[in-house]
Length: 295
Image (cartoon, rainbow, N blue to C red; front, side, top):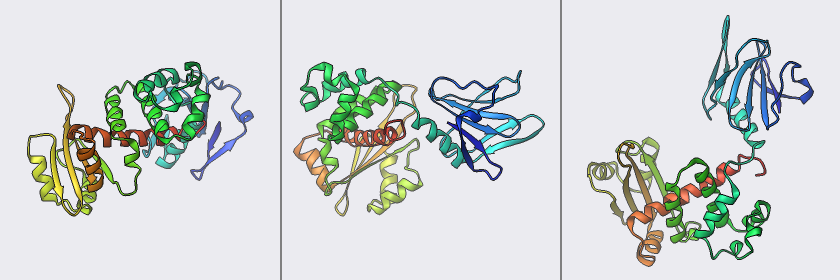
């Protein structure tokens, strides 16, 4: 894809033949943005972006693009080229739409089979579920399978093996419990002792007072449980070991979901935290999958 930054700050898509003659586009999926001062920004399917010039002898520079952040590109002898957050988001989105999602299907599906052996997708011959297109047909009509697959595939691609334990807890809780309208759960994360401002406001709306949350945070024990008869249950959990930073989770479940997981399924408090966290992981995975090619 070829784009040009216009003088009013908007992006215009150009035909591929408008690429400057002395610039060679990579064979992999790519997005190129033509900029003032004979410069351009090029992103490739590997996720790398370079800021370069179409003039010979000028070394390209690696740059990082982050969602919702401004990008400032320096120019010799003139002011920088500023790309606002909206433009940066558009560039990242366009590149991802040309890119296959990360991870390997075979590795993901073979491990997923150990968690979901009873799923109809795994009743077939291995050659069938190892075929990515064939497996995708099963996921179209099975939301639980789709959420678990993408959470696992992304986790394996990033080496985030701790996700596996959360997926197990999520499956143990029965993922459909999180889809029932009468059930409600939420999880917040904080590197500090207390939730951030937005999370605190949401917790107050659930009838948990700032004083109650402060008292929970002041205790060294984990997990800690607070019950509110008007709302439900709030669970504090602390995670991290060794030199890793310790962070706090705040997990909310309404009365009905708590009854289902704690009383009926006899899940431990630790597993309940992981199950709600697993629901968060799998939903985030679906959201991320929607950014890539073929969504």
